[in-house]
Length: 164
Image 1 (cartoon, helix red, strand yellow):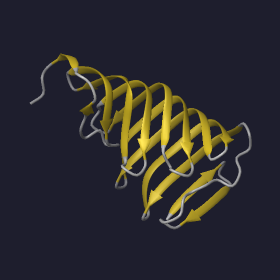
Image 2 (cartoon, rainbow, N blue to C red):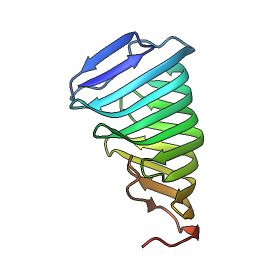
Image 3 (cartoon, rainbow, N blue to C red):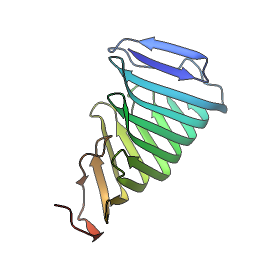
Image 4 (tube, rainbow, N blue to C red):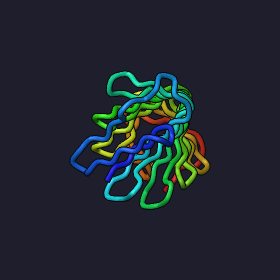
């Protein structure tokens, strides 16, 4: 089942073959939380300090997203703003995007996308990644919510120790 909580008042339940949608979001609504689940397991929780509805898209400001693997938080993302498409369930975080994984891998970029079908995080923008004692720079990246692998879309340059 999927659940969507808006302003802690609206609760919509859908089976896995339906798309999750909000009935109405008040223009300029404060403190909105969207929770995505699949078969009773949390996939992610998105919180926004301020939100507006533009057609099928929720636009949030002061966005934070917790991604889950099982019942544990696998990574946390924060950004200046974000968009959530209620039909495709895809998201994009925009502006001062920072993501940290449970193993302390840190990622900085200007935009980061979530592909709900593939359950992948990606960007075509420049990225900076800190893992243990090294820093990597590239343009474009694909990974999962756990940041368990990094697939770069361009040559990578780096500083620090080489990992085995």
